[in-house]
Image (cartoon, rainbow, N blue to C red; front, side, top):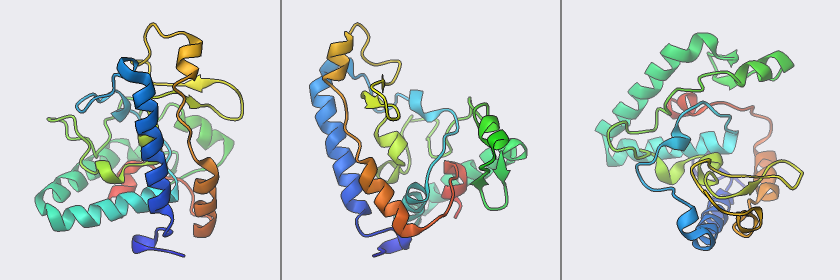
Length: 201
């Protein structure tokens, strides 16, 4: 069942679970987790987002157009400038904003816009202008999260300085990948994109 902006109704549940998992991991991490408002380490470099993320950002922009029209225009202006600067090298279809799926395009994306600021980032305050609607990658960045199917845990390079592997593992954030996959299945195949294109939909 789909909710507003075409989002599955259970997307709110997914967001709630992830945000609760982040809060729980942050409590366990304490001072090791240095993520704070204004820290923009995770706001540079293009990354893939799925259709749930894109629809959530679209819903955020719709809300912003009502609550703060001027800010909405600023965010979209930054998104257009981002595409103007990086669109020529975009490894996909710049008309639709969908990333390519060939081996060559996937490889190209590894080096694509790695130093570019996210257009949702307010360059003056260091805050995300659509924070409540941010993608899952943003919600899970910072604490240790499991990388792929193995035992390897990844976390923000600014965090957990001096912590032992055991201490890092004790702060692992559980991410509900199965629920996210189920909701993506409800949407059908839509492909992946990046934040700039999602902000302009």
